[in-house]
Amino acid sequence: MAPGNDLVAAGFAGREGARLIAKAREEELLGWFSRSYVRQIQEEDSFTIDRFAPWQEYGALEWEEVGEGGILTALWNLSGAYTLGFEVNLHQIPVKQETIEVCERYDLNPYRLYSKNCVVAAAANGGRLVKRLAEKGILAAVIGVVNPGIAREICYGQVRGFLERPREDELYRIGLAADIKRRKANAQRF
Image (cartoon, rainbow, N blue to C red):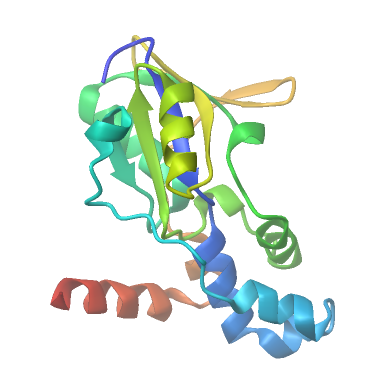
């Protein structure tokens, strides 16, 4: 990973966290959304992103699986491993509309929400990586660029700021931390 590399997000940020919320808080959500919409949120993804996939063959130079703490934690970890900065546009990060709506109901940040089936990667040619992932049925987007130095810049429209250190996943804020712990324990068994 080096300055000038593109940053690519594959999969949907916060999707698994929104699914867990919809399962745990179904009755509450039915007060805001139709039953069919809540069921749609509760469904598992129809695709799987394998963290052990041949990412280098796809064109990735380095990658980080998104998990607890969401995509912003994954970006922090990836850039920190190389002591490099980045500039990321939040508008470019793939997020499903239902994830945004669930987050709005509970005042959560979808970019700090638990994810699975989501990877952040650095590539010399992000467009090529996105195309190769699309051939595998995986939605991906170029979300930013790796920069020299250590500044981790986040852009949201005309607003620019710096990424704060990672903090607890948003699921902890609404009392669903047990779901994360259970998933971690199950993953360690395999």
